[in-house]
Length: 517
Image 1 (cartoon, one colour):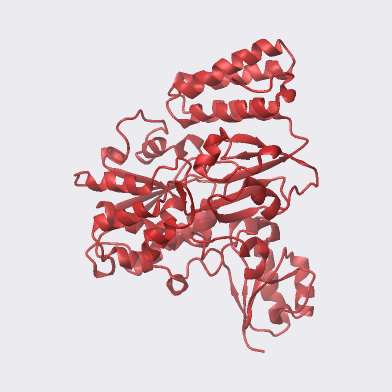
Image 2 (cartoon, rainbow, N blue to C red; image 1 turned 90 degrees about the horizontal axis):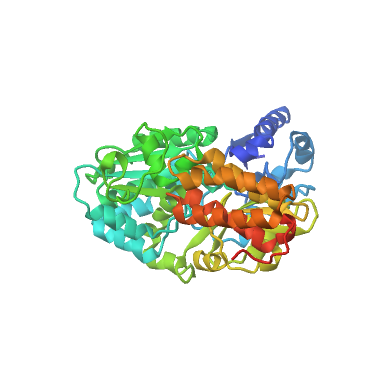
């Protein structure tokens, strides 16, 4: 029998459910049977309910088995899984699994396909095409392509990337910076981590292109300390990029210089906000800066700075390789391209789904997610992280794009979707929002620092049934104050989950009100 290539993910999610044990057991059983296998530790495909997902390379394509446990290894070999033999854990060709086949993968096209640190495989699968094109273009041509693509910030704000880049490009300064915000702190989100662990070179490529576009020669990746595997993978990826001449003083002989440094955060949610992140990068306490000036004019160390999320920068190589117009043909309205949605909570098939903007929340939760894992009815889903709105099941036909969600008093955020069944207590969920803000507030502005504490106390009274209508009126006032008076989105968005819970689930607050005015 010739050598067969077998893939077992080394993504953190896969490791958490035993992927390392599965890989070790596969190697040992193959050795015991005298079978030669080529074991590759790849990234995750994002089908997290099937992790650890073992794939076998066959003449017809890669065949998937999962979720595989250590105890399944002997039976897999007995079933001749290396030749795609029938097994209860078999799913046929990986690419034909409906969850994966029904996606439009542009940013995540290579994630889970190969060893994430194999630069040769990265280039074979289309990597570096965008960078090589960018190195032949003038800076204005690059920003024009990004602007034409309609690419918007995937970190939550949704600001057009091309406009931000052009602002920095036009600034006259001896030093400019590219800062990648990888401080992925929203509940139910993992796209940044998954991409860094599964296809880190695409992020580095995007940062080099950004540097070329705006005239920056230095980049920083600010990544949360809770991601040890991602930090390790990213560190190795930067080293390999340097060795290949893709970072340094003269990238691929173009005369373009660019260096990338990795900085690890200390766990503060507020450092996901761009100005707090910049403060932390400068060695200061992570606190929000007053604006203006905006970072594009006065950012890191007071210099013009591009601050983009991981997914934004990782999409840039596709835009340059295929053209801004091609990318803009995906999506709808002002929400162009694709969005990696992350399905979590009480959901049968949790994972990552990259779809064009315009897919409905119902399609994501029921179509891809398969409803609840518990079997209980879905009551609500929180979209956009811990500060996002709760959307009731009756409104799941909303289109998942910036404008449609905004029109429904919700937000896209980083694309996280957390599903709750009918046992959830929405008054306690509203309290959690205020408590979360109390804990994570940087403390700089009073509406956020004090408003969240008063909000939590007021909700405690409501939950206890004390003067419910009066305290609901106080809560309304607090929400208005925090929304209008907070310095940044931390305090400004904390009322969103509270008001949405009140609007759609007044019965959980002991109130007969149907909506918050």
